Length: 157
Image (tube, rainbow, N blue to C red):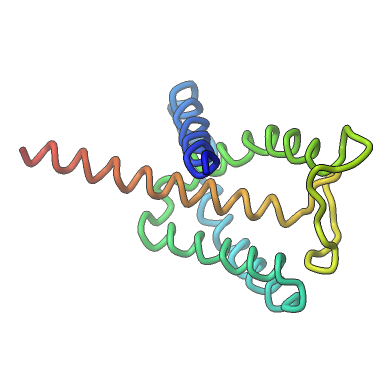
């Protein structure tokens, strides 16, 4: 149960720490191209691998999250999101790598390769990078939406 509180907090925490130390948006120019490339790529792979539930569901939801964010915010936060995403891959691979047997004899978490592509980065299934992208993007999107609503309401008062 605690994971449903700690993971969203960690997503927003990484995002805000990076915004504090890097106030400019270093990857702003990559936001739209990222969406334009990733959405068709994820949808295409999702349809190509309908027999692999973890892959197809993960990729369809990832594409949907990118589309939803783009509809609501256009590319306003995408550069900051991409920067956060790239930085967060370090703890993702470290923690998930340990859980999937990267530093232990037996993995704590075992993935059924019949339900994923079987492509691993270290010991981490490639789908986990998309799952993590989706989780991070959703939390940042909600955070920015609620933060902007509060700012707007305080201006009206």
